[in-house]
Image (tube, rainbow, N blue to C red; front, top):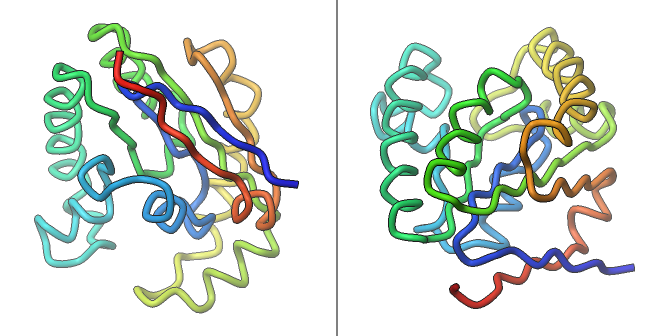
Length: 174
């Protein structure tokens, strides 16, 4: 069964999911490249390596500055990062509220076995299993806390089939 997510054209959309859940693939299937702010892409831009954790602080500084500009102009902005920790979402939520923009979470909550299989064949190398386990725990906590963090909508996609079959439509500009 195909479901449709209708998103406001001026929204901030946070993709939420552990490494390997398909956030970047989802973003590339449903959004224009100009709409997506990817922490991996920004790390690559800064350090020539999307996995360079030493570039994370600079990557998120740049992501927040670009996001501020898009929200100020009322442009759809999609943040492609794990977003599994409440403290990491807090500033993003504040930016959406400051600019009076709708705030949407799309949670890619795939079974750990699927993530583990995908992780093993990542073109940029597998992530440590301990990191995936930790992110899974944080994602479980997030599923409980997201509704109370100020999101206008939280959409949970719980299987690879659901992620693949969902349609995303962006509404008219306000």
